[in-house]
Length: 149
Image (cartoon, rainbow, N blue to C red; front, top):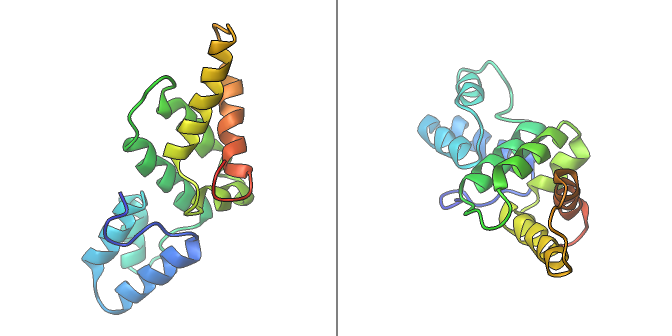
């Protein structure tokens, strides 16, 4: 998932890396960096052409991370895509986008947290868990401090 450049903790780290690559004329490496972080081709082309000063912003860096990580997730009990879509809608708020971008947080761990909570309720006899409950758990995972939950 983050094989070449690693999992960046902030938009400043992504843009700093992109800036160094661009300065060195390594446009294809900028493209690889963007792809690895889920940054759209349109933003990448604009950046390489000098139409923008930065490769990405907080919102798009967080959305890109969610897209990349959701794409690598294997669904178990709760489908990842609706959860990822909900979380992406929250990325318009910079505080949330910053939390998503942390390297200590991931969609895989988020989904494990959601599925753990879901499993507990199912064991207690709950047969239907509302989508909004699952979405709240996912949001809470990213908003909590620390590396774990």
